[in-house]
Image 1: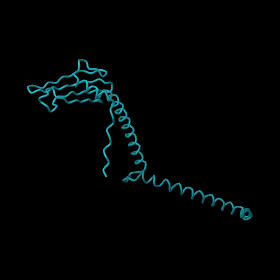
Image 2 (image 1 turned 45 degrees about the vertical axis):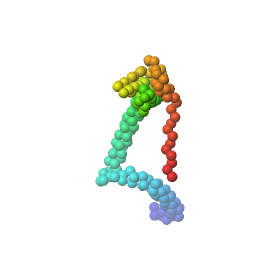
Image 3 (image 1 turned 180 degrees about the vertical axis):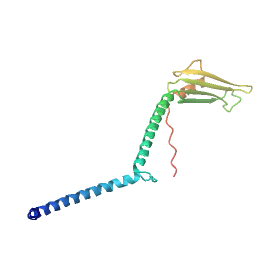
Image 4 (image 1 turned 180 degrees about the horizontal axis):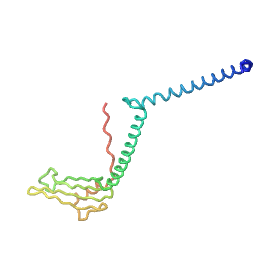
Amino acid sequence: MLQLLQSQSGPLAAAACLLSLILLIWVVVLSRRLRTVTPHMRHLVRDMEGRSPAEVLQQHLANMELMTRRASEIKLLGEDLARRQHYSVQKVGFVRFDAEKELGGELSFSLALLDEKDDGVLLTSIYRLEECRIYAKAVRAGQADKATSPEEKTALERALQPQQPPAPPPERG
Protein backbone atom coordinates (compact mmCIF):
# COMPACT_ATOMS: atom_id res chain seq x y z
CA MET A 1 0.00 0.00 0.00
CA LEU A 2 2.91 2.30 0.76
CA GLN A 3 4.27 1.69 -2.74
CA LEU A 4 0.88 2.55 -4.22
CA LEU A 5 0.78 5.81 -2.30
CA GLN A 6 4.34 6.66 -3.37
CA SER A 7 3.63 5.91 -7.01
CA GLN A 8 0.43 7.98 -6.94
CA SER A 9 1.76 10.82 -4.78
CA GLY A 10 1.67 13.38 -7.60
CA PRO A 11 -2.02 12.90 -8.47
CA LEU A 12 -2.89 12.62 -4.75
CA ALA A 13 -1.11 15.90 -4.02
CA ALA A 14 -2.91 17.55 -6.94
CA ALA A 15 -6.24 16.22 -5.67
CA ALA A 16 -5.45 17.47 -2.15
CA CYS A 17 -4.52 20.91 -3.54
CA LEU A 18 -7.74 20.99 -5.60
CA LEU A 19 -9.78 19.95 -2.58
CA SER A 20 -8.04 22.63 -0.48
CA LEU A 21 -8.79 25.25 -3.15
CA ILE A 22 -12.46 24.23 -3.28
CA LEU A 23 -12.67 24.38 0.52
CA LEU A 24 -10.99 27.80 0.53
CA ILE A 25 -13.53 29.12 -1.99
CA TRP A 26 -16.33 27.61 0.10
CA VAL A 27 -14.97 29.33 3.26
CA VAL A 28 -14.85 32.69 1.42
CA VAL A 29 -18.45 32.27 0.22
CA LEU A 30 -19.64 31.34 3.72
CA SER A 31 -17.73 34.27 5.24
CA ARG A 32 -19.48 36.69 2.91
CA ARG A 33 -22.86 35.21 3.73
CA LEU A 34 -22.08 35.39 7.41
CA ARG A 35 -21.17 39.08 7.09
CA THR A 36 -24.59 39.81 5.59
CA VAL A 37 -26.47 37.70 8.15
CA THR A 38 -24.60 38.87 11.26
CA PRO A 39 -26.11 42.40 11.45
CA HIS A 40 -29.59 40.93 11.04
CA MET A 41 -28.91 38.36 13.73
CA ARG A 42 -27.56 41.04 16.07
CA HIS A 43 -30.68 43.11 15.51
CA LEU A 44 -32.88 40.09 16.12
CA VAL A 45 -31.24 39.13 19.40
CA ARG A 46 -30.06 42.54 20.63
CA ASP A 47 -32.27 42.33 23.73
CA MET A 48 -31.56 38.73 24.65
CA GLU A 49 -30.77 39.47 28.31
CA GLY A 50 -29.45 35.98 28.95
CA ARG A 51 -32.13 34.23 26.91
CA SER A 52 -31.39 31.74 24.18
CA PRO A 53 -31.88 32.72 20.54
CA ALA A 54 -34.82 30.28 20.41
CA GLU A 55 -36.52 32.10 23.30
CA VAL A 56 -35.92 35.45 21.65
CA LEU A 57 -37.32 34.17 18.35
CA GLN A 58 -40.34 32.72 20.17
CA GLN A 59 -40.96 36.15 21.76
CA HIS A 60 -40.71 37.84 18.36
CA LEU A 61 -43.22 35.39 16.91
CA ALA A 62 -45.61 36.03 19.80
CA ASN A 63 -45.26 39.78 19.21
CA MET A 64 -46.01 39.27 15.51
CA GLU A 65 -49.18 37.32 16.36
CA LEU A 66 -50.29 40.09 18.72
CA MET A 67 -49.65 42.76 16.07
CA THR A 68 -51.58 40.73 13.49
CA ARG A 69 -54.57 40.47 15.87
CA ARG A 70 -54.43 44.18 16.63
CA ALA A 71 -54.23 45.03 12.93
CA SER A 72 -57.37 42.94 12.35
CA GLU A 73 -59.15 44.74 15.20
CA ILE A 74 -58.14 48.12 13.78
CA LYS A 75 -59.40 47.09 10.35
CA LEU A 76 -62.79 46.11 11.81
CA LEU A 77 -62.94 49.38 13.75
CA GLY A 78 -62.17 51.33 10.57
CA GLU A 79 -64.94 49.51 8.69
CA ASP A 80 -67.38 50.27 11.53
CA LEU A 81 -66.40 53.94 11.51
CA ALA A 82 -66.85 54.08 7.73
CA ARG A 83 -70.40 52.69 8.12
CA ARG A 84 -71.23 55.17 10.90
CA GLN A 85 -69.81 58.11 8.98
CA HIS A 86 -72.73 58.00 6.54
CA TYR A 87 -75.04 59.07 9.38
CA SER A 88 -72.81 61.74 10.93
CA VAL A 89 -73.21 65.48 10.41
CA GLN A 90 -71.31 66.27 7.23
CA LYS A 91 -73.03 69.37 5.92
CA VAL A 92 -73.73 72.54 7.86
CA GLY A 93 -75.57 75.71 6.88
CA PHE A 94 -75.78 78.67 9.24
CA VAL A 95 -77.59 82.02 8.94
CA ARG A 96 -77.79 84.80 11.54
CA PHE A 97 -80.56 87.38 11.34
CA ASP A 98 -82.60 89.92 13.29
CA ALA A 99 -86.05 88.62 14.21
CA GLU A 100 -86.93 92.15 15.36
CA LYS A 101 -85.20 94.86 13.36
CA GLU A 102 -85.09 97.31 16.25
CA LEU A 103 -83.01 94.88 18.41
CA GLY A 104 -80.03 94.51 16.03
CA GLY A 105 -77.05 92.28 16.68
CA GLU A 106 -78.39 89.35 14.63
CA LEU A 107 -79.24 87.34 17.76
CA SER A 108 -81.55 84.89 15.94
CA PHE A 109 -80.27 82.09 13.74
CA SER A 110 -81.15 79.12 11.55
CA LEU A 111 -78.86 76.07 11.51
CA ALA A 112 -79.09 73.12 9.11
CA LEU A 113 -77.24 69.91 10.10
CA LEU A 114 -77.28 67.18 7.41
CA ASP A 115 -75.69 63.77 6.87
CA GLU A 116 -74.36 62.23 3.66
CA LYS A 117 -77.90 61.57 2.33
CA ASP A 118 -79.04 65.14 3.08
CA ASP A 119 -81.12 63.94 6.03
CA GLY A 120 -80.97 65.81 9.32
CA VAL A 121 -82.47 68.69 11.24
CA LEU A 122 -83.12 72.37 10.74
CA LEU A 123 -82.95 74.41 13.98
CA THR A 124 -84.13 77.99 14.26
CA SER A 125 -83.76 80.20 17.31
CA ILE A 126 -85.92 83.34 17.39
CA TYR A 127 -84.70 85.94 19.90
CA ARG A 128 -87.04 88.67 21.05
CA LEU A 129 -86.90 90.98 24.06
CA GLU A 130 -89.59 89.14 25.95
CA GLU A 131 -88.67 85.56 24.91
CA CYS A 132 -86.42 83.21 22.97
CA ARG A 133 -87.86 80.22 21.14
CA ILE A 134 -86.22 77.32 19.33
CA TYR A 135 -87.92 75.44 16.49
CA ALA A 136 -86.79 72.15 14.96
CA LYS A 137 -87.80 70.68 11.61
CA ALA A 138 -86.84 67.30 10.21
CA VAL A 139 -85.04 67.26 6.87
CA ARG A 140 -85.25 64.29 4.47
CA ALA A 141 -83.36 64.27 1.17
CA GLY A 142 -82.72 67.98 1.50
CA GLN A 143 -86.38 68.93 2.06
CA ALA A 144 -87.82 70.17 5.36
CA ASP A 145 -90.96 68.41 6.62
CA LYS A 146 -92.66 71.77 7.38
CA ALA A 147 -92.83 75.14 5.63
CA THR A 148 -89.62 77.12 5.93
CA SER A 149 -88.83 80.80 6.46
CA PRO A 150 -86.44 82.60 4.07
CA GLU A 151 -83.63 82.28 6.65
CA GLU A 152 -84.24 78.56 7.05
CA LYS A 153 -84.23 78.11 3.27
CA THR A 154 -80.90 79.95 3.10
CA ALA A 155 -79.39 77.77 5.85
CA LEU A 156 -80.61 74.64 4.08
CA GLU A 157 -79.24 75.84 0.72
CA ARG A 158 -75.85 76.60 2.30
CA ALA A 159 -75.71 73.11 3.79
CA LEU A 160 -76.61 71.54 0.42
CA GLN A 161 -73.91 73.46 -1.49
CA PRO A 162 -70.84 71.42 -2.40
CA GLN A 163 -68.36 71.84 0.40
CA GLN A 164 -65.02 73.38 -0.48
CA PRO A 165 -62.04 72.00 1.37
CA PRO A 166 -60.55 74.53 3.76
CA ALA A 167 -57.74 76.64 2.34
CA PRO A 168 -54.29 75.73 3.61
CA PRO A 169 -52.86 78.09 6.20
CA PRO A 170 -50.52 80.76 4.82
CA GLU A 171 -46.85 79.92 4.92
CA ARG A 172 -44.83 81.67 7.55
CA GLY A 173 -41.74 83.30 6.25
